[in-house]
Amino acid sequence: MTDRIEFKAQLAVTDAGEITGLAWPFGSPDRVGDVIEKGAFTAPASLPMLFAHDQGQVIGVWDEIGETAEGLTVKGKLLVEDVERAREVRAMIRAGAVSGLSIGFVTKTAKRNAKGRTISALELHEISVVAVPAHPGAQITSVKTIVTSETQMNPEEDTQTPANAPQIDTKAFDEVKARLDKLEAKGNRPGIPAIVQGAANTKAFVSFLQGADFDKKALTVAADAPAYVLAPEETSGEFIRNLVEFSPIRSIADVRTTGSHTILLPKRTGITNAVWVGETTARTGSEPTFDQSEIAVKELATFVDLSLRMLEDSGNVEAEVRLALAEDFGAKEAKSFVNGTTAVEPQGYMIAPGIAVTNNGHATVLSADALIRLMYAMPATYRNRGSWVMNGTTLAVIRTLKDGAGNYLWQPSYQAGQPETILGRPVVEALDMPNIAAAATPIIFGDFKAGYRIYDRVELDVLPDLLTQRTVGLARFHARRRVGAGVVRSDVFRKLSMAA
Image 1 (cartoon, rainbow, N blue to C red):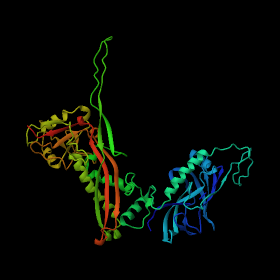
Image 2 (cartoon, one colour):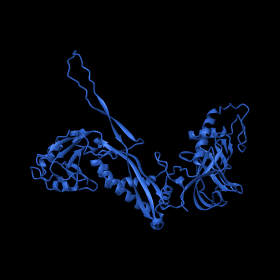
Image 3 (tube, rainbow, N blue to C red):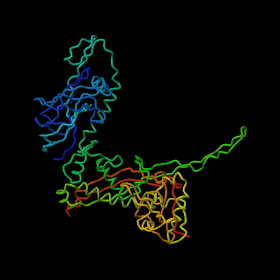
Image 4 (cartoon, rainbow, N blue to C red):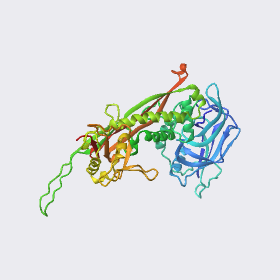
């Protein structure tokens, strides 16, 4: 059965932060019909205590975990002396805002029953304090109180409110409880995913591709496309690394992420006008002008057909799908980053307006002197950070060129990981750059980090279609990603034109 993190459970606490509870009652189903049998739990000697299954909110530790006839009972301690969030949770428990426990586990063995599953083996990962547990019977049973000279309370007794204790305004807790109730109710709905990091994410993604009985709670949903499933972080990261191999401009451009469909960037269209003045000469004002450029996020989509037999028999189906998508998406991206002109693709740097041109001096014969003139026509700031971009055919011609002293313009790399250089600056080979021909612009030089911006919106999301192609023995996986790109500064680039 596919491994997946699941959340179930119930809770009780004291002033010192000692807390006991029934994490899972035996003999009754939870809200979605799941039953856990006695003897199913596998747990270490201690487990982290989280708040609402948030791994960023560790509030204590469970150091006594065991099965009884009643169910899975736990005892632990809130870190009230060291963690502010633990003190807040203790206050919420006292006010009744939270009173439940919920367990996070990976199912090992289970079978379907009339309403849900009967789980006979699982691996316990964490136990959380929650407002609404997945199992109504999972509750905190006690919270122990610190013994002081003022209260003189028995440390083994449950918390009681002294007669002279200050009254607590529970209005704020009621508001928190209402919000937590909504979040917990939403999280407990079947089929609603929760964000879970780690190996379980990738395993579930493989099962997702294979069409197995997977738990959607172990997958992350893209915010702008709830019907799609975003690949796990590890898969998406490897996908982007593969893209760089097929889309080399990513290695030199300014690549960022965005949460919007459009990025507006301010740009200066005029400069200040300072003048030299005498001691008492009147100063003149400057009125620099500004405008804004816009980079729209575009969408790239395709689908992959895989045979049902391959899905059933192959253990590396995830890698095969990732590589196929990286090759296709990378090739399409690379082409659009160079020559993208249509409304549905990113803007290419070769068609962006305002980029200066240096003439080669000949329509078909590439000139070494022209490359030197082009490079030194750039301001030193950008020239010293610039990169050459051209295709392999042009690069082959340049490898034969020499300067006036007989030195080759092109220099090989003598160190692993370092690029080849032309006139001391790195060169990137882009397949989609034009060839050397009359009136063509086969070479561009510039500071791509400053001048060309790439925005990733959705790295990779996949939607499986396991039905419509089944009659021919196939499963279809629809893939999409969203990315935008464009020139943000044209003055940091210069092109070589094959013209006299």
